[in-house]
Length: 472
Ligand code: GLN
Image 1 (cartoon, rainbow, N blue to C red):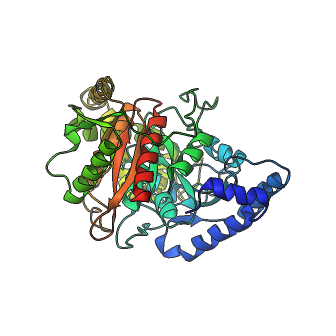
Image 2 (image 1 turned 90 degrees about the vertical axis):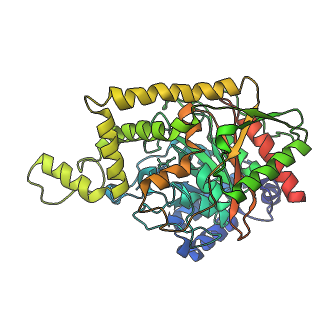
Image 3 (image 1 turned 45 degrees about the vertical axis):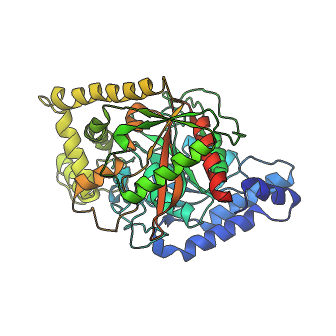
């Protein structure tokens, strides 16, 4: 695969144009309709944007993401395009502005080619809870892409675009990246502005990139990261260098015992063994560590995330955005009918759980206690990072499961996030890297977790493994 730098050499010489790259991407999207990865395109707009980048190139400018084609998850605002979160309740709502991440991509010369399918309001782990119908895994169309950023992951895996943005609340970038065999990063909380990302659970949400190479992933990350006056939780921190080196020599990699339990899928376990070996061969040191509160992460996550969601989703009332139920006789009836028509079953389930956890009498027992345990989950990581530079874990307990397999069992679906949600609770960054295939050809993956604002070490170890696997 040609790297972005090679492509940019060709762009600089005028041997290819951004318009050609974008036209090719649009064609591939059109041909891949059965995957249901991309839910909207606007070919005329997109080609026009490509021509504007070509003009910048002719003017002697070489923007850092020139030649980069990007799919945005359908919960990230893009001026003049539909923004539906794969929900009926948003109807045909069109965003009147760009998210900060979108604006930064455009400024850096990237061209946005389409909108990625997702679980409604980013609630799910399979991209089956979508008003557009399920996305399909490019490596096996009978299997899920993972979720909730499944359309973004499938689009990257099927080469419909070079990179994509997804969003993470409990694993929605890393888990589909693992299922589709691409790289997916959950940045540190506060690293990327949430302005223009439709809120699910504000204390957990982060936008994150997906790509087929670490170089592309890091390039997109560098473009979107940084302080934004429009998001008070965004932080001003130096960005990682773009030349992260290839060595893992001397890195201390922690292996949390709680993530390697006997029930782990044998092929996932074997992939992790391979990664451990590769790290040791590169001179990294493996160290056993313990994160004792891991087993509380899923219950805590589903209390905190749903509590915040029940509050964030109160704004969809039939008055302000999208869908409005017809012929309501009173305001109350308008709210109730709009919400009952507009939200899917999973979203309703979350709103009810979250409302319950926040209600008088239960608040102390559930929400307030969950916040305390969340703090302990974070403390586990802080303690571990006293002795190691990063952690290695599986990204998911199994490879991609079959379409429909977990739809009747929400709790089984929730357990897909058991290895990813702790990092969201703690706010730390995590990277899912491809780690070979199962006997039947499904992608396997490993996850690395780093201290706050430690994305650079994630790119470094990702790049090392990518290079080792390419030369294998
Ligand atoms: N699968 C998790 C959930 O359903 C995480 C979703 C996400 O990260 N957006 O809540």
